[in-house]
Image 1 (tube, one colour):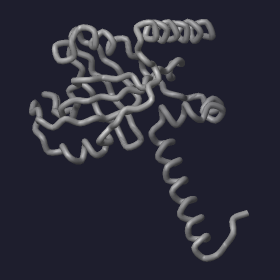
Image 2 (cartoon, one colour; image 1 turned 180 degrees about the vertical axis):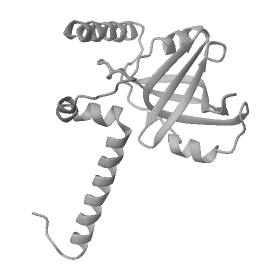
Image 3 (cartoon, rainbow, N blue to C red; image 1 turned 90 degrees about the horizontal axis):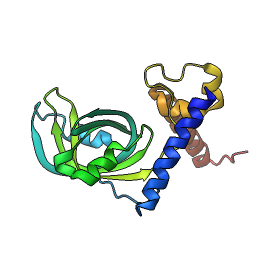
Image 4 (cartoon, rainbow, N blue to C red; image 1 turned 90 degrees about the vertical axis):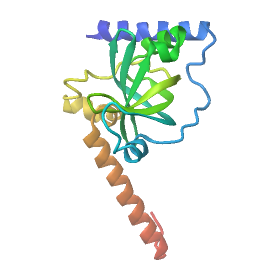
Length: 194
């Protein structure tokens, strides 16, 4: 098991070195997004299957699932608010940019600029005109089918649990909001936190 993990990390480090040799910053300073995944879902919930809009959006998040189909790459992009599918086509991006998209790994952080559409199967998507690597993931995420099932590992590596288990993330977000509310209320009433 250790050798598989080490081999995967070495493969990702090689990709990182190739990016740096080409002059591409694997950890750029900024990407200006204009919408979250939830905002795109809310704004375009009513477009029909197979329909494409003229609206260009800029979204950013972690790639949690990649599906390669010849000249197309479908990716699930997750941010703090939800999930959105990204459709990257060779003809829209060009050969070099599409090759860069094909080199992306599960866990990488990307920024995507593109038009909003709904696929024939009804999945709300962003048809990418630009894909920017924001942060290269050097360690592989747990298997997407089994997830993180070992309770001891979930407790020791809490960051992984928050990444791969949406329910854990919702519990942490709710807990954080409750604690902030209690602190605010007590602070407004003159109590000092100890």
